[in-house]
Length: 234
Image 1 (cartoon, rainbow, N blue to C red):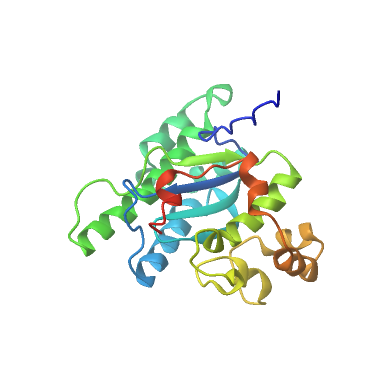
Image 2: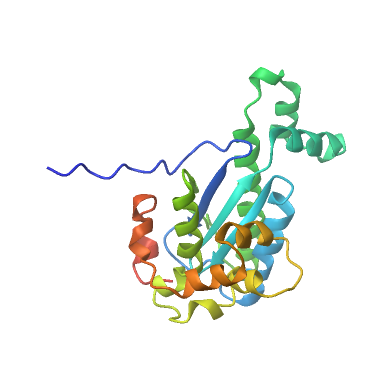
């Protein structure tokens, strides 16, 4: 009898220096982005609330969900950032975190709250823009720890090819709301482009890997998307 595949921990604790696949969808499968302005605003808010706390490697925004591959910054870096903030600008979780002794600090609570701040800030504007009420994002958001180099490589391909998986665009390398173009074009970016390209062995190897016949099924050991994402309501 074949052993069943291990079930990924979709609610992994967020820890300093660790890598994660972070993704989420709307509550009910409705559209998360109705326009390019929505997508630009989401990325703007992502940068505002999360860039001080993590490094972003790749991403893709789809109609009703998103994917990011990130690494949490070191706890020392995050503490230094929080201590640099004026007291009045610190959130309650941030104040509580700094007030604890070193051995009692739990970084996850601060990081989880930053994601919730992103979702709340985006949903507030989105709801006002479209005369909408109620929760927008599914909770809790998913975060799966990246547990190997193989996982990391397939995950980058999976995120970039996600629009192809959902039948939105066969030529996924030209999909606008993806980090792929930022990886291959020599333009300023806040993404960890140099790290990603070096990991693959350079720009040419990165392109070759994405143009090869990679199996989107290879990532299923680590990810099974929600029914709303797979339903065709993209």
